[in-house]
Length: 383
Image 1 (cartoon, rainbow, N blue to C red):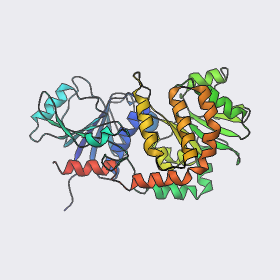
Image 2: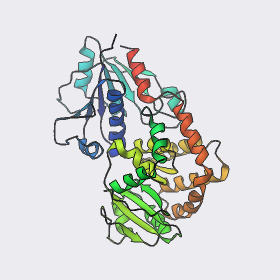
Image 3: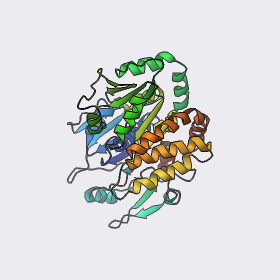
Image 4: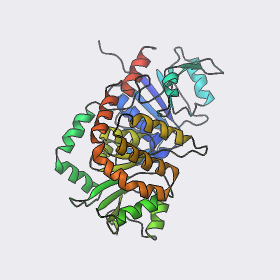
């Protein structure tokens, strides 16, 4: 007998623009498309989501995209009739009125707090733990994405690796993808995706690319690293279709691509600097050389997150190439421009030496339970 769809409410308060919106929307899409659930994504700032999810109207009260109803919220006074499952994305909290509505329901929903992704050891112990909400006593279950079998896993669509490998066997697919964002790439050029937070470390890296012997085409999504690029280019910021060229480097401004097409963009690149959470995970599934620029936090907590990830990710990797990746990633997150430029040649040389390790890493992560499927199983067991 067919099961009636479960109603899910995912609540996202945007802190890290594309990372928060990207994770919440990817989860919502997977629940709707792969698991047949009825999903509403509540997001307090739909503007960044609209850039990666065509069809979302940031001015409208509601939009429907890929089977997901996107609504603006939460806000004080916003009516809320909870469904079967409520996900508090990234633990930003729910309005008291919404919690009260959940407590009054004949069958209170399964309330899940989706934590930020981390490789830190505490995630293993916190995953699937319950904590009562102080006012109502409603159970909140903590779901911790992560890189070990004791955590909640990572988002990964069915058939992703097969699509990736088929794409790479088709040179025309790569050419078409790059052309779709207005990038012209010569056969001998390396393509780098530059999707980072504002950082003073960027201009020295651009100098290193420009002064190098090998051509580099750096793809920069519009609005990313604008201040640093403006300073480096003397005000001649590239525009779509009009790259800024200096020496061996061509800086190409590209439009944001729909989330559904972001993987193809990564598969077309030779390396990437990625930020936040969603693009960070996608780079790992893509098995390309990458450096993760973590969301900067005033107390420096992001440095511990970076160190924990590098420890896990590079365990068992060839020593020399692993050290090169660590130095490059640490300099990026420390905002150390000279250090980043000095770390670039070893990082570049390490690409080939870590190819087998990157693929084995992705296969190991994929052998563990997938995040959306795990949430569905968990929620059904409590309904």
